Image (cartoon, rainbow, N blue to C red; front, side):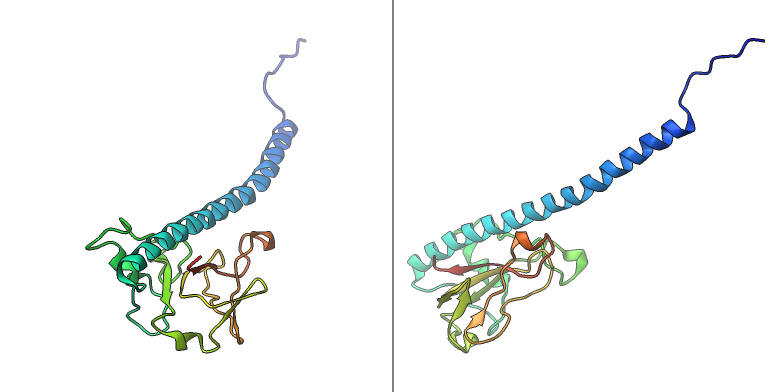
Length: 181
């Protein structure tokens, strides 16, 4: 009696292939997510740099930085004066790490606070940033990948907890820029 030769894969071969694919996916997804966080942080740094240039240009024209509408609040809406009547900035950048409302994530603006207007908001009058004591005139802030506002963490002088990618993609800390620089 002749045996028919069967073509195809055995169950064991299929299981090995599926297992290998599962391992590759398990390695690739965390790397992809880390790339996404790094891209968002880079975007925030670029936006803060461009806003800083726009703020300095505004300061050159008006001899003051844009005023805050609320005392001591980090509010991006106060930067709308940079878009009109003179366009120092075409449209204000959004914070990809804001969590005020999950439906609005990525639509709210970067935080801004003018310390010239409210110097008492600092209380201690100084910031401690990476071992340096600074007296900023304004600050631009993003919540960072932990999606929580960690700015400032308290103490006198105020200590800024900055996001550091070496502590993991969701480590604590904000992405901040103090100005002028």
